[in-house]
Image (cartoon, rainbow, N blue to C red):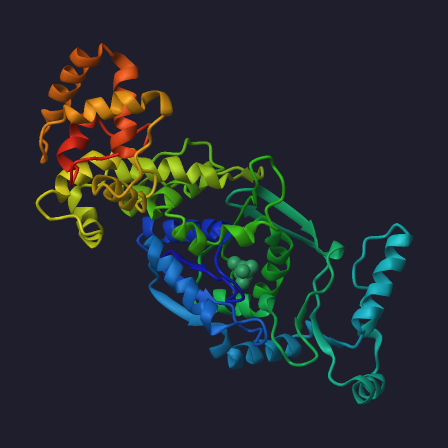
Length: 440
Ligand code: GLU
């Protein structure tokens, strides 16, 4: 049985980078008919906030990413304490007392000598009496996992065969001096106890994975299959980390991005297959293949979401938008026609309101000085309101005859006078939707 999880820390809003991780894990579980767990990594009481935990669920729900179970690490602290005891019993856990400043100094010395900045395990040499003295002086120490110095290898679902020399990695701190359990320990305990079979996460976690494989094995568990996706960059390949804050899912939602546009893009971006606009989550699930993704950084341009959103909107039947149209105050009798006319002329749904204002005559007419006389004369020839789909053709023929104008010189000033827009739906379709006679 396939079990995957998405494990955000509720310390901020989800952004497109997080969504990529969530989506891959979700699609793998759904494609295999397995279980998808939403796990909140909230062991940091200072930075974790309930409002972020709430927002994460809201954002996933907006996208249609549903979870079978939700777990909170803060509710599982006893499990982590038990795992820590086991590691102690197996002599894979040791207490260390260096301050951050001391560790920093050690690292600088190593770097000066051209050595990799790996923790020197000085704490392993401390006698019980020395530890007692340090505890009296500095309080409880922090606890490090003692890596076995051998190569750690796995076949990564995206990166292929990986081999990391454990001696090149510092023994990871799993419990802080103040007793706070750190993510690395909590995560392996959860992955093991919850039967997680596949973990997909960002390539910034590759070194974590190496240490986690050893911790899982030290606890008698079996490591899941790991895959590390590339990190997103901006359109020019620039690091996105600083700008991810502006790519929060809720901001994209506010800007009118449609879930299927976002999902369709992220389910393909960075893979060997082209982006295809999908109509439903089921289609996305069917078309997903993790092995098609590459290791190279993936360029992401937020602007790509808007043409995709427009394309998605064009495919929507009236029933899918009827509530939103009715909320604008469009009378039910003309609402389906309204949708047919505007849907190819909007990028985001909010623009429906702009067209409705235009059709109600609430938009200032645009008339060039050179056209003022022409437009005034033309309006005198306009049949009485209300209009039909024949009105435009009949009217413009009459105007052409009276003024001698034709082509763009005839149509554009009239379109601008009636809608205030240089572009838009066919004017024959616009006329019947106009709620009152235009005036200048
Ligand atoms: N809370 C971790 C993070 O957001 C989870 C990483 C993982 O998937 O294990 O980076």
